[in-house]
Length: 537
Image 1: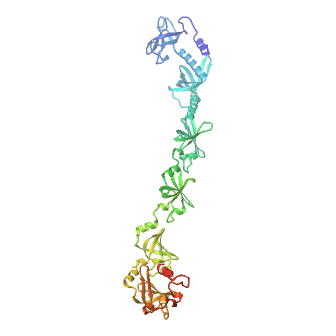
Image 2: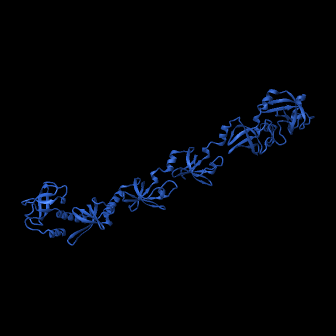
Image 3: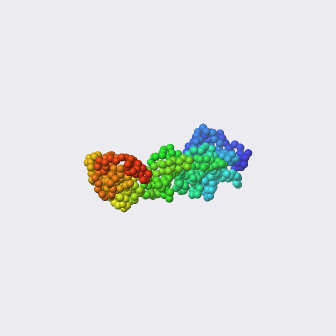
């Protein structure tokens, strides 16, 4: 007999027959609003107050009760089920305490320092410090028995909801840590944010998970406060379990595909992409291609006109190189833009007259400012005049502004001409002159191999020294009667002779070597080469 049975026997001493304190067994024969009527073998039924028994009790059920009052003056002996149920409740609580099992009680009322909880008819005390969470009167609650003793022959039972919650948390934690694997996606509640380390989460109120700041994003932003707030619920991916398998390491960025893999899969060299300027540095521009993926634009590839975009600007850029080993992408902003000179040519097609200012002269060509950023013109000596000047400076001067004709493009330049502004004199010469014609022309220039004579149309022809009689001395500015002996407008050549005009024929061997057109000149070059340079430039 345990101490609770002794307590019960002391409270209700055993007596013979139907006496107060006698435990009897009977069958329920009737239930009304006030009583449960039980046949206990007495001359009349015993009655139990209706509130002492559960709603589940029905007629025909067998039940134990204690006689608490019996007298001939009473219509029915008074029975109590309360003491019996309390004894059973105490026995069950003692067993649950020994086995560490949970029990369910009903919050009956609030008292000083805590709550009174009814557990199968037994009144237990739930301290406020052991509630674990807010409780409501009249509501069931799961508990752990943390103390059960006798005080002054009465049972003292102390319970804890907090202990139940902690045990349940540990159980759930073990279930979670066992069931979750790398790559699983879980939801967790943010319980702590450390700006230097990362975010701590609680999964299903039981398992802690740590989100390092390196795992927040593929991008540069590693500030945890930009990704979550305390008490917020976020989804994360499991990376691994801690060594002691007590918590998880998780990632937020791995919920998205690695931006490098995504970019390489979707783009190739030559593609044009849209990106935001992340940073402007001395060597170029850093672009945000996607979240967590940057590209670099070298300074020489930023612009055609020297203008640099600002941080935050949206730009288009052409992919120049993809370097997998270095995980680097090199781009060009300017190559994704229309070329300025091509745009200029669209507005000013070939054959258009434009004005420009001679910026500088470089050897046999000149660079011309056409009045638009990054648009320069180029003109070669051969396109300056039909008269084929020896030097560019004979026609153009630096700083001079004049009219040009657009001929097309040459690299990044707009190709220009001046002679094309006037009709080709060779077309006139072809119609006006023929071999055999006799003319009086002025010497424009005397060379070791002959002289250049100027036609009225502004072009020059050659009077070779071999076609000049010995008694004729050539002088610049002096006029001579000559005869055309060769005319080739396609090649831009005309050759004159004084000898042919006179009808003279001199033997080839009598001519000095320096006077023969195909012999080596004093400078070591053949006359044909000199004429070719003179006429074709």
